[in-house]
Length: 287
Image 1 (cartoon, rainbow, N blue to C red):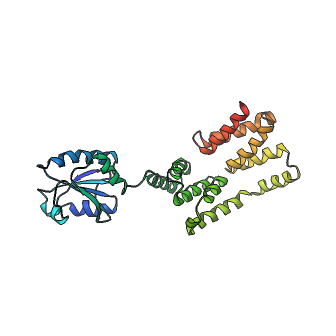
Image 2 (image 1 turned 60 degrees about the horizontal axis):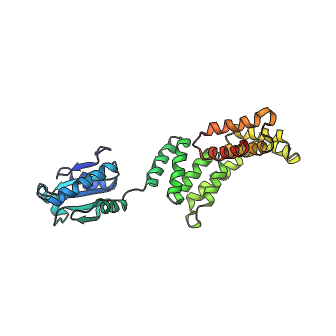
Image 3 (image 1 turned 30 degrees about the vertical axis):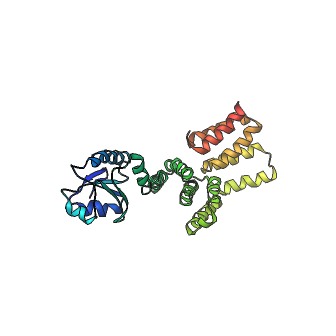
């Protein structure tokens, strides 16, 4: 097996199948056919090595000395040097002959390398698997925006929002999924959202809601409802109610509402999008 950190490998008949064929099912393999006497090869190789190190293993640079490995060069039909080929899933899919400028090599690689948001999605999925939802959230939010709100990333983001009981944000993300992308996976996430909505109405919360129907302006009841929401991790609902209280009376109940509000912001953390949103709202009242 090839080590994960191996970005550049020399190819021989002994390792050719492993490096050129087998590895191309894991990531793109860029084959550089070169020789000592080839001056253009000496110009191209540093460019390829620089990119291999910069991309840090997103592709494997496999170097084939065409003089020493004539059989491999013949098998790939190499007729001039340098020749570069891109292998993917066991097959050559692209390439060029002759030395090329760095920008042109980058453009070739970009067609076959995962985008930044694909890597972010993979990272987030690993965190989700270990139930690290708070850590996965900002990564997915960035991937969601960078990908142009791609459907599969949107649904993964919605799942994290649901796990964190941020149901309004989950619903907003799911509403943005195009009709053509609303497949069985989408329906499954929507079902999870509906179940989470039902779970939100605990007996304690329902009891306070019923009292508020009779006295909708009772700020004491509103504060009780906000506290119940926060205790059940429905932070957005709690913050929304508390902000409504603070908008009318910044020091309601000797500052208890303000403390509950800032405590939730502290739990969410400074970089959290929901915390940022409500921190800004609080600033509009304070200043």
